[in-house]
Amino acid sequence: MTSPSENYDAIILGAGGAGLMCAAIAGQRGRRVLVVDHADEPGKKILISGGGRCNFTNVGAGPGNYLSANPHFMKSALGRYTPADFIALVDAYGIAWHEKTLGQLFCDGSAKQIVAMLLAECGKGSAVVRCGQPVRDVDHADGRFTVAYGGHLASAPKLVIATGGPSIPKMGATGFAYELAKRFGLKLVEPRPALVPLTLGPDEALFRELSGVAAEVTARAGKTAFREAALFTHRGLSGPAILQISSYWRHGESIGIDFLPSRPAGWLRDAKRSRPKAGVRSVLGGLLPDRLAEALAERLALAGELANLPDKVLESAERRLADWRFHPSGTEGFAKAEVTVGGIATAGLSSQTMEARAVPGLHAIGEAVDLTGWLGGYNFQWAWASGWACGQAL
Ligand code: FDA
Image (cartoon, rainbow, N blue to C red; front, top):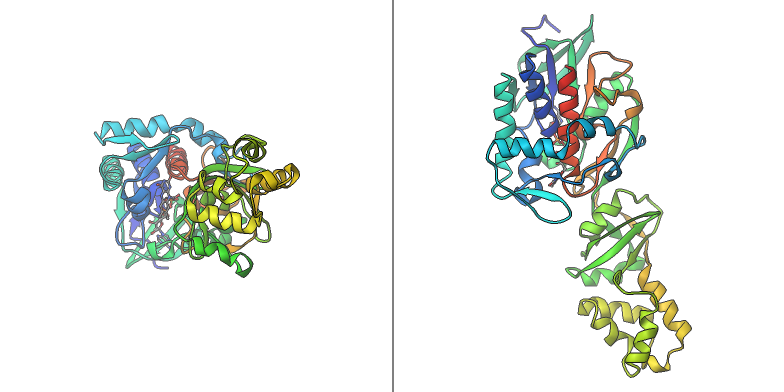
């Protein structure tokens, strides 16, 4: 590399939620900050999030809503920069918002307002944001990081990896954070797609005929359960309950679906007493979407009136409906995943400053790190909180 033409206090790679928050905070603390992104505009994932309205936080966000090899790592940042802090910022910009469900906050207007707000905050700190600039090389010598991007060279004593995870490559997502981490000797937790639809193999292909049918269910993987809507698709299973559970599911495992989570134990036996002449198909038809009731009744293969079916048979059918086993063949992959589970191992990072213990001056924030939230505004809250914590330390 030739000698740097631009000197900064910190260079942030990635102008997503985490990188922009970090740049705004560090800039407002008087640091000279450069943000570099290869995409043609900043905050592209913010712009498409929440159906264009950005589910920008969740009022209930806490450590229990996140997956990481270290379940304590997020506590410091989430405790110091809370959903209330972000809401105060949104309010200060006069951005109207509403709670949709389960503590999820969305803009009334557009996600563009959140990006404009973050850029305005960067402007207040005189942070320089350069988009459409591929990073060609990153060098580290004599306590300084030198970044070759576009036709420029910039150098700083601090470098922040904020390039996210590989989910949705067509939005500009890459595994660049992992390449950089490896180059600096940081360990990775195997990344895998999360908040992603699951696919069903040929044995369960019949369920694909239900494509478009949705129902409120409880979905389980191991000890984790989510009660939300599930949706049958032409490839398998989707909908919030399935996306949530996909983050916990591992290849080869089964998932359990309770199709009637509101029914008390013994409900089918009780139905036999109150509606002895009804069949299983018609009882299910009163509780579930018609096509789903038909498909489940067909698979339960219990013909005739309830009155003629022994209690034990009904109890066993009830158990099956409460924990219907599916054996996903896989997921729809990074192309359809909202986030990535895994990433830069937290064991090598300070939870206070996000700085790599082994490489002073190098930081990693946001989705690049092995820290993944549930569906519902939790991932942005992590982006803001980790960006804020890092920005305080630059
Ligand atoms: P993010 O991916 O946002 O930013 C990384 C930046 O780095 C990008 O701008 C990218 O272009 C850049 N970059 C990558 N490689 C680079 C390279 N080699 N050189 C230079 N720049 C590079 N979360 C939530 O809480 N609420 C929601 O409503 C949604 N909705 C949602 C919808 C969809 C469709 C997706 C895909 C995701 C969501 N999410 C979400 C998740 C949320 O978008 C995600 O967790 C955050 O955007 C992560 O923020 P980061 O800043 O860490 O990465």
